[in-house]
Image 1 (cartoon, rainbow, N blue to C red):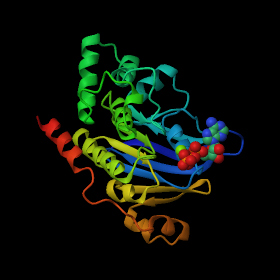
Image 2 (cartoon, helix red, strand yellow):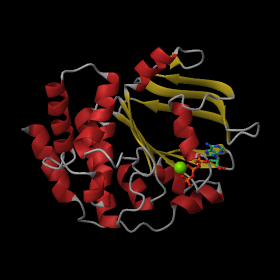
Image 3 (cartoon, rainbow, N blue to C red):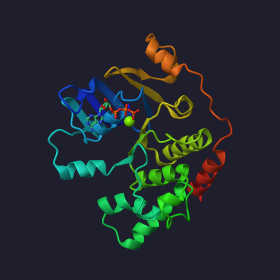
Image 4 (cartoon, protein in one colour):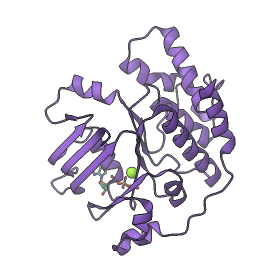
Amino acid sequence: MSKVLVEMQDVSLGYTEVPVLTGVNLKIRRGELVVIAGSSGCGKSTMLKGTIGLLPPSAGRVKLFGTDLEGLSEDRLTELRSRIGLLFQGGALLNSMTVAANVALPIEHHARLPAGAVEKLVRMKLALVGLEGHGHKLPSELSGGMRKRVALARAMALDPDLLLCDEPSAGLDPVTAADLDRLLLGLREAMQMSMMVVTHELSSIETIADRVVMVADGVVAFDGSLAEAKKSSLPSVRDFFARRATAPESAGRSMLERFQGEVKS
Ligand SMILES: Nc1ncnc2c1ncn2[C@@H]1O[C@H](COP(=O)(O)OP(=O)(O)OP(=O)(O)O)[C@@H](O)[C@H]1O
Ligand SMILES: [Mg+2]
């Protein structure tokens, strides 16, 4: 059995005495790409916050890389979080800073490196997402798809073992969204990392998911393969995943090919 990076045992999460999620049991193993799906407001982002200890559970246990988060010192938590890349819902780049400065943020926060080394790392990460030469620009000078890739480069800055992406393709056109999906798959392949990706785009789910976890009515309603989800005995799960997908066939190949070329060279 491969290594478990995230483990939730009977976890409840919420912001008031009424929990948003209860009884969550979830394992993410090394190299796995797990999609978290469910309707708006069901608690997908809440689940990601619980995974990294931004939101402590009101019941149950959360283990990250085998370490129980309960009672951990802030230092130890920071150390564990340095192994996690975060792509926030909406991208959340700092608009007053250049692309390069945005990507450098987690490096400067977690690692003590000379400025030259930081610059070199930033250049490498931007190249990884096909944005070499754009470091000096401001986020506002980029397209929506490029901004997402900057956010991805920032999330990848410290070569994380686990990447959490909250609706990475929200607001992108289908072709650009498919580009981003292939980029995620390429990065997973190249870096051997695990990913939790929140999305409700069926075409994305079909492209990237090893496993799907569906959240509904405050619980994990389903956890298994997409093929199983489509045959689920629960109508809400079956209906959600059996919708017709319209994945653009040829989209995005160029960017992945470029990325693979860079990794090889
Ligand atoms: N900071 C907060 N304080 C109080 N309640 C919150 C907070 N963040 C989220 N909630 C509530 O928790 C519930 C789940 O929210 P969450 O953001 O996890 O949903 P989601 O599945 O990510 O939705 P979406 O698809 O729209 O992003 C919602 O009812 C929301 O109102
Ligand atoms: Mg959300």
